[in-house]
Length: 395
Image 1 (tube, helix red, strand yellow):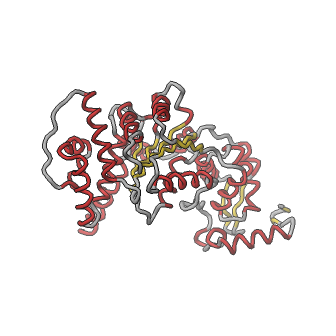
Image 2 (cartoon, one colour; image 1 turned 90 degrees about the horizontal axis):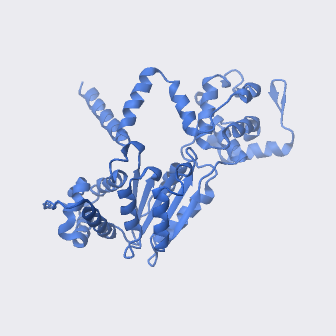
Image 3 (spheres, helix red, strand yellow; image 1 turned 120 degrees about the horizontal axis):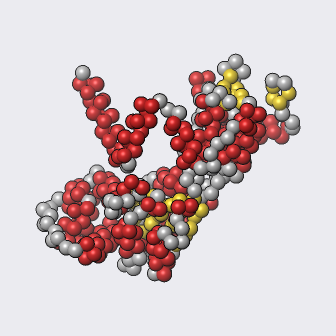
């Protein structure tokens, strides 16, 4: 409790708890002087998602068994709840295991570009495969050609980087009607997935923001997951629950997949509890959870436990001086009454929008331009950085 300008423990048990926390996790509560005064959000820790992680791990274990079946996991939640972070952390847990992890993200502005996320996912996989040893690459090439044969050209039209793996001349594909072309593509994609997946190396396909998926993508995905001859595919979808109604095409496709007998596990990523919020705040401030409880209680009430809202709210408190580090006292300080009067939007997207609007106009303009590139922006930034480094070294 606070008495004047100092804090005191109410009981000896609380002292023991803090000492144990410092001994068991010294990096979080014992830190260098130059690390003071900055919020520290852990990138290696997932808050309050142990149950969801276990469900994903169990699904992977079943698919990787010799007599397993392909499965589907549907992750739902509101924007900012941490759906994508959950799967990316799950991916990290698979490090060292023999699995092909594919990632694609649908974007609202690309709904008129059919199959965009699926093409991105398989392109990323092909880019990784070409880095393998030559002997491994030969095996992959032979398996693909044996399964698909002369029809491989259809796939190369959609995934040009596949040519780097095949390494043979590709005949031009015949121009056919749209419905016939889609049916042919679904069949060839099935063969392709069978060729690159097995119980010893399952295929894990994560598609994010499925609420914006186009019809062609939904049909192709349904074709892949309902393929009775492929038993080594783990398909993970995520979507914003508030943007998918009973009449949404995604809902209809899910029903069709379920009718086919495909095991579907639904994982809800909701808001975190009060204790988890305090754990996050304690980690961010590198301060005992006993001391951060009062701040965490307000943060919980304001954010309702939405992880993105919590992070953005803490940052805004620092920017406005309501949460600051005192170099003299070497501790974080906050004004409970002022924070209590502060309003934040209920929606994480709106909160992010307000944060962006506080940036300089030049930065906002730059972000608008980068946003137009979607997922390509990350690749472009890497290229620009590499180009800049080369120019600096050359000069």
